[in-house]
Length: 455
Image: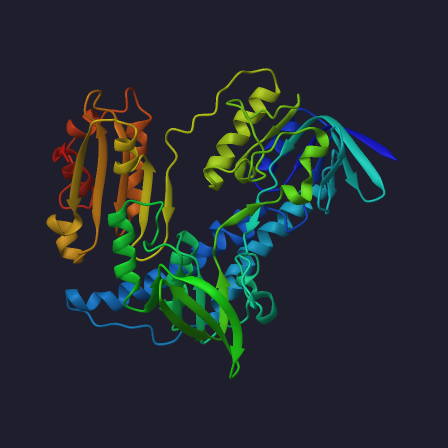
């Protein structure tokens, strides 16, 4: 049996944006989703992790307030309530999306793993479905490294950690990126004995070195770090999970009740088999698209994590609209020059554009501005010793190339810089002509730009 649609959407994260506008045009839509509706962000990414890190922020802020003359600490941690709030939002929203989709007679929802079996043809149980227009937004999943003993002893990933009913007493986190930073922040704040193991000698290597160092220092008050170590083996001993580490000639062993794997992601195209529809993949299995988000097969577009770059929900939402426009006869190029992101750890980090090393590697002569929170009135009042703003500006054109904010309210403070980068020629001139409320943390951004210098 074969059923034909106007459009097939694979993935119910940002892919739902396409389904919605397609239905506004009265198109017949098929949606494939093999997990809870709403995709990674809602169920195992942005939303649940921020519900957790917000709890950690409150605890950390209370504990750090001693330096300004107030002694506080969290009396109790109600993990049942924390879990209830998370479940209520994520499960509730996911079910609401599913009810809405199932209630639309113009949409068929296939709660299955999509698999191409031929050109523009997807297997759906005993049936196959086809469409001239297909959207692929099937996301990624945790990349679990091949470590002797890991499968045998068991582990958690971001796909299932939010379902735990109680926290472990001790936890080993494998990985040194943003997931490791955020989970280490949460679990250590609520009293779990946390150890982070990373292969790289630096932490948060995708960020400016100063930001990675600040987060490392901030978390190290409650977290043990083993950076620059390879995991050689995992076993059990006395009811605990033991991880054997090696760095050069040095060997170490760490133990905990549970292991959380945060060692990166892999695409889901080994399940989708887009190559059976003639779609080109790169060496790592990600779908290759052009500047219009078109695959090499006419009528098939891909965006989000499945194309292997800038894996943020806000970017996938933007790309979904670009794909929709081009699917309907426009020629809109995807713009990947100004994509902000954040790490919700302690301290918080928000970044956009190029790092200083990136700009210099491209041969761009830059001006760098750097200002500490603590060197402003509000920053001193907060006693934010690790907070800073760093900005990178093209010396010749005076356009902003990138920025990093590290410290309280980093995400909100960065957004103004993002707006400047998208305005006119991306110059900081509007900021230079503006008054800044005193005393506020906005002054840190202002002074960073006013302090531009050759670095």
